[in-house]
Image (cartoon, rainbow, N blue to C red):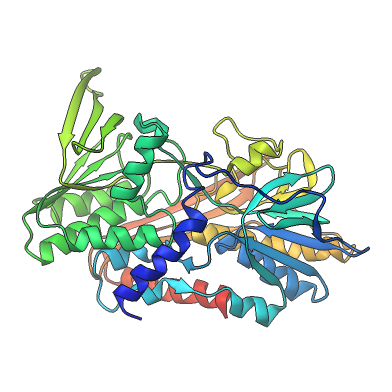
Length: 444
């Protein structure tokens, strides 16, 4: 499949997904009446999973691995699985990485492990009736898993809905797979020179190292092509959110002429038409803040992230930041024992929002649900997830971090972090091996 075909493919998913990326409804959805129940339970148990990403598909597979008779349905609004992990390598032109390395079909694991995957959008959840309603009808469930990932919130950059749509179209975030990725790749390849801005989201967001890895690899690409360009990273934090020492070393040594990192930069407004970003720059040493502006030639505007509005609309308990709360040390919603939260949507625990953490949690949760369906003790809290996150800082070298969750003596789930920030070529090989391993585990 060539890139022209992929661009066509990208347009196919637009109609399904573009209506929900901002969290607010942009096109009025008219689900059929709730009374039309497409699949009643008929005295059996059914697990419905909303979201067919790294977490949702892992849960589905591991339920079936541990309970072959379980009925499992996965709803996914996108009709293509395009991986965000590894996409930065494609953006940066890393050798032997193309778009086919990012695209997978969930139909194969659905067939191999005998669960259903339905390309449809869930628009509401009735927890009293245990009913999920999609654009095409309603389905009863015994247990519900919500793994809806993230939605975008451009309001923290001072953009209203109209301006947000424009920013999303012209300077795609590419924090979701599919047409956003295709557009960002095209923007990078067509860049003729000047200032290329990458914004780091405010608050809690998906994959904390990703903007910095992307900045490194895009700068590497411009450098390799001898383009007169500078990547400017605007970060509201004092230093990179993850692996700060390693990223700053890469910025200051490998790309000192191609990359500028601006910390403590709080974006207040973006003029999309004039390609100008306005931000407050805080000088911590002088304890003063100045108002600054930056004119750019192109950009990767990554807005703040938030959980799906499905959680709030369903009356599920949320953290102050708006992510899902669960009963420690389980994945069960704080106020509904029949609802589980997993992946990026989860906010109760200090887990990094990464593919590996979603996958690790998905394995644990799948086994627990299978045991619950078998009327066995699910042994919640006996096993905790682990995470590894590799970040390339050049075409053939990188850094990484590991996380290990545990239950502390105070009854709270915490995470032990270990950093490996020396820039090494061996990390590149580990990155490839990790990606091959996690994708084959999910899709084969």
